[in-house]
Length: 381
Ligand code: GDD
Ligand code: MN
Image 1 (tube, rainbow, N blue to C red):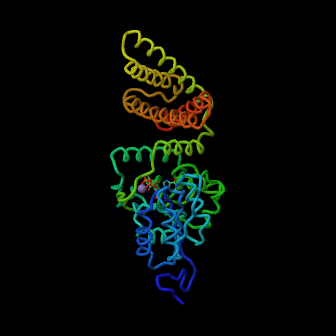
Image 2: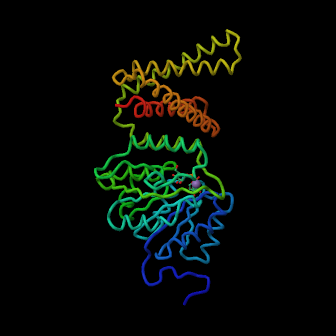
Image 3: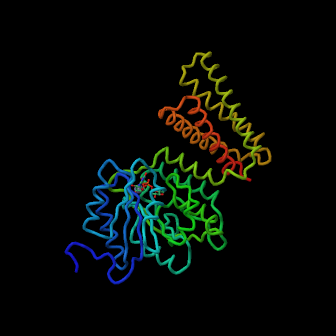
């Protein structure tokens, strides 16, 4: 018997696909999202699992209200936790179908691509099908600003530097995508090795796969558009960047020469000395504190760059045109690392850690980040 308004969960067959949807403060998007899936997946037997981190706007209540009348929909609510990647992992673990898709809950991803991704994995062409903004025919128009575009580009370059290669599969052009599909069997093999930090579950999955399956995964990109957000706002912020950095570092810090790192850290210390000296001189010459500090920071970074170029990366030394690209990139990388370090220090200090451990953790994050990025982006092997 079918109750009016209720949907038979699996008429005449078993579930074909689980759609996992991380959401935080997405109340107005829940119903439109279900309606969009309903239209896009009309040919399939599906379930949707919304994973909410106890959003203050009543997202969980909204999910529950929908789930009461639509049995394809389920909510997973986490209390006292935050994080896109871990939300996705737990959503997948709690789902049931043989195939699993992950999609944002803010309607920025084009859900009509799900059947296309599904076909790519079902046909055995790949282990993970990724809806890509940068594949031929894709489009990233939904990125809200030039700053987001640049951020996204930077992230892609960093990610590409660490992604393993598989012959026959071109380098991933959109490793930051949060919209992809894979088989449960594949996910289950990799799950024990996922780090689960931060925002980039796809990267985590690809980087962890070789430990779970014994080989680099076959990743296929299919073009997709990225729509502008209509309701609510993006949760990407400085902390997300720090987590992204930590995730990448987690994967590739081993294997790099400790001697080189030591040199880099010592050069950093020398930079601090330069900073203090120049600051002192600036004040002595009668500049105000802000102006002196800006000059001192620039002087310290230039000194660091020069010392690293001549000492730390002597064997990869940049000259001529290389300096024109290397120096600005170094300034940018260090600016990000230092901001992240300061953020971490402040967060720790605010959560009642002493100023020494907070400061030390901040400095450590900054120097490790600056080093890792310098080694892979600026003074490449
Ligand atoms: N449960 C949970 N917990 N969900 C979260 C959290 C969290 O801490 N943070 C974000 N989300 C949800 C959002 O509600 C949204 O549905 C989805 O994750 C993506 O977050 P947005 O805040 O909308 O991200 P974006 O639009 O800036 O990022 C997009 O671009 C990235 C590529 O640069 C998304 O497509 C990402 O998936 C993608 O990786
Ligand atoms: Mn979004």
